[in-house]
Amino acid sequence: MVISHLRGACVRRRLCPGTAFALHSSPLRRTCEQGRFCSGRTIAIDGLPPGVLRLGLSSADLEGTVRAAQEDGPAAALSWLCRRNYLQSDDAQQRAALPMDIVWRSARAYAAEFPAWQKSHELWEAECARLRAEHQQLQELRRSSAKASSRSGTDDEKARKEEAEVKEEPLVLPVAPRKPELTSRGCYMWGEVGRGKTLLMDLLVLSLGNQADHMRQNSLGVEVQRVHFHGFMHGIHKQLHALRSAGAHDGLAKAAEEATTGAPSVLCFDEFQITTIADATLLTPLVSKLFEQDAIIVMTSNRAPDQLFQKERGHDSRMLDFDAALRSKLEIHYLDAPLDYRQVAASSSSPLELGPDYHVAAGAAREPLEAAFTSVAGSSFGAEALPVAWGRTLRCEQVGGGAARFTFKELCGQPLGAEDYISLIQRGGIHTFVVSDVPRFGVKRHNEARRFTNLVDALYEHQCRLVCTAEAPIDDLLKGMDRLCAIEAHTDQAGRHEAASENSMRQHRHGDVTFASSKLSPCRPDTFATAEADAEAGTSFIRLAGSGSDSSDQQDGVEGVMTAAIDSLKESGFAARRCASRLREMGTVTYREGHAARWGLH
Image 1 (spheres, rainbow, N blue to C red):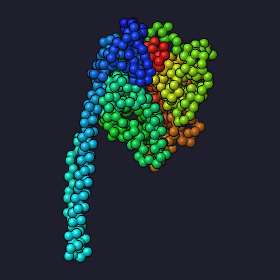
Image 2 (cartoon, rainbow, N blue to C red; image 1 turned 120 degrees about the vertical axis):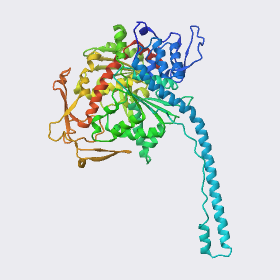
Image 3 (tube, helix red, strand yellow; image 1 turned 60 degrees about the vertical axis):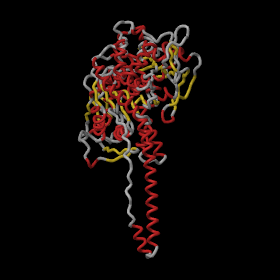
Image 4 (tube, helix red, strand yellow; image 1 turned 90 degrees about the horizontal axis):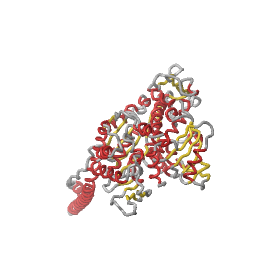
């Protein structure tokens, strides 16, 4: 994020006391102290993208940002925020805003032309249907006339011959009206953590109609889905399962059609990543189907397209096809901003401002968690089975008022995924997570670390609050995971380093997708494998340079990880960097003010 504290006053700039907030579709209206309405512009809080909400804008500046975005595009909104000293001016961000402007203009132009085309296309279809019916009637009449004529004085065989020789008149149809074309199919923006990728994407979302993170069309007909990629793929997998159960053919095409109902549909995926073989094999045909539906796709990521799921590229050409599809359709832009602005914002905040949510505490330090939980839940709380993905539930002993209290083991020590954490927020209504005993992470805890980073990503995207006690400060908590960004695999058994031969490859079918695997890279539904499970399939020992930051890393490696999962481990390293950056920002006053505004807390 790019919150500037250069003048010292921005950290104290808060949503104005005279601003009244209402949740969901109710509008935000700026009022004066006497309660009189002061502005005709209404802005739904749940319609604000999270990157904008986190800036802590005053009502007037929020209106100015919305006006600049929707009238002149994302780059103008970025310039407006810089002029108002909410952001530090950054040439790299200004350059990165230009591809977003192109997407904005493309979507608006398509949406403006689409209604007229749709009407003319309906008229064209009706005219074609009329002409076909007239042509069929004329042909039937000619055949009847020929048959009647041939029967007067000729034998039956000659009559049938003459009837068959009736000349078929050509059917001439009018030319179909030309459908609007998208001048931009989207953008893939990548760069290091905290450089402003999320904010730029959210300014695009704001410019296209003040959308929330769920499907909704604006007055132009543009449909913007600003969604967590894990949540989107979870929905696609569920939909494919339902379609297959109903006996549908080509379920992927149907799922893509139902995911894009706008004119056009703009799909925005923040922090795009590929961590499972199932997603990797599904993405290429899915993206192709989405482009066929005239979708615009915007992605941000910490990695270049050709660095996504690199290990699988040697076993399945679909990742190469996916890379080619992205580069042929999307503008690839590297955001080379020099600073991690989340760290800048956290460094500019005083210890008192950063203190309330993240506590370094050994053992059973419970007082900060008790205070945070009761401040939200009050005295009315109890045990509850909270909904997670695929119809399951997660029991929590203390839930109340939108707050839930967990131990780290309960929340991240068992097999839960990003879709489960999203479900706790969206379906369970939990906006404040109170978590105890977060450990220091090393590579031996890569599974738990990945769940924790998924949790933080989900909370950050939904402007939720995390109050926790942890074994180490933020800068040290995930440092042991950073080395995974550059890991390589080593095998102890002869021949395991060799690529699978063509004869050893096996074909698998996952719904509408077929992919290949071998004994050296077995097909597994989970991201990571254990040494025991893959003892016969060919697992690797990953060696790391340098020693770890905790005793669990003294052997400088991880055993029992199958070769195809190495890229997932690399992604865990990038996710750890992102998590630390986001944890710093989540501790700032500005973030907590955005949390209170988003969830109607006063």
